[in-house]
Amino acid sequence: MNILFVTVFEVSEQKGGTERTTARISNELRKKGHKCFSLFEKAIGQQFQKTQFDAVFDDCSPSKVKDIINDKKIDRVILEGCFTLISQVIKGCKMSDYSPKLYFVHHFAPACEPYLNDFHALWKQFQYESIAKLKLKAFAKIVLYPVFKPYMDNKFKRLYKLAYSYCDKIVLLSAGYIDEYCKFGNIQNQADKFVSIPNAVSFDEYLPDEKIKNKERIVLIVTRLEETQKKISLAIKVWNEVENDDKLKDWSLKIVGFGDSESDYKKMVKHLGLKRVSFEGKQNPISYYKESSLFMMTSMFEGWPMTLGEAQQLGCVPIVFDTTTSFHEIIEQGKNGFLVENGNIFAFYKRMKELMLDSDKRENMALAAIDMSHRFSLDKIVERWEKVLSL
Image 1 (cartoon, rainbow, N blue to C red):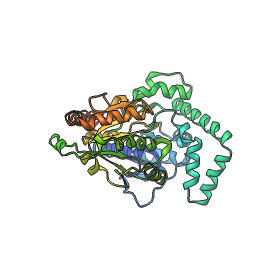
Image 2 (image 1 turned 45 degrees about the vertical axis):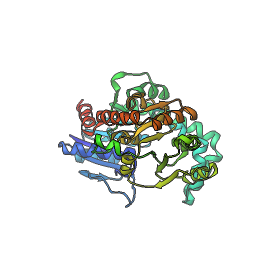
Image 3 (image 1 turned 90 degrees about the horizontal axis):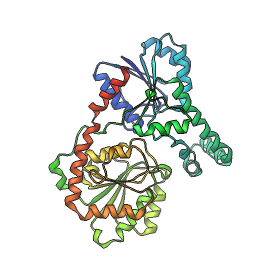
Image 4 (image 1 turned 30 degrees about the vertical axis):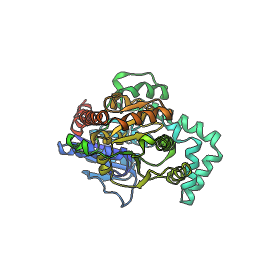
């Protein structure tokens, strides 16, 4: 089978969740004898290691899409979350001599797009943009916000419907997202149009059970430091409760990642007088997962969070605000993690304290997390992809 993966950014496992998933799935499909090709809109420079494909293309115009399909005899086209490219790809498919099946993969929770264009997100974009042309563009969006915001919201609703109308399958990260997709796109659900395939766990290794005893009294956050989606300000407020509790004085918090809101978070930590918080910057997180006992996630929304699976497969018990449907497929309440009412700082702190003070329960949940993470091993997820692509 000849498969064309279409992404906004050039594919690298280091770039982000969408690109990492695309890289891992395409690599495995190539091992199974399929030919995989990459078409992207934006290059990512030399700081990332690029994923190998049978060929790579960087022109997403309809005529080029047509040429790729004809030249490489493409059987399947997979649009990896790129709503903005869907019109060009559909036109290219229609112009081609072949009739490849078209799949659209939504890598986030449906209806998350309005959050990405809210005023706070646009203001942050304006604050931290260093390229003059893009900074001016961000400023224009702020000035025109009363018009820009509803325009963008309606645009994405139209794109949801366009993807649904022209693609053979809509692939979502959770079956629970089907109704959300239909509601946002004002679509009458046809069940046979949708399939759900979660992301595979990121690593090929799982923490050996005997290593659980070596875990340290560390709580871990691994994320992009960006407030609109990740809401790390809430995690810092939870941690403030921890530092004010004398029974928990031997615990520390490590934050791995970087992003536009990093300086704001550091100011918040300083303002609250927190002493046991460290910002680790951009790091390979594997060693942090292995040493840490607990994992925090306070996101406003996610699709199928890669870091949550990473934490579990390396025995780091997650405590998560219950904001996203897919969390319920990953976390079995009280067995391999905890879901907490969204925004309830005190309830989050109480769950953390419960595990911090009960090492037996913490270790048992860590073992369950490792065991249950095998449900999302790469080989099992690729099997599901092969099945869908053969339809």
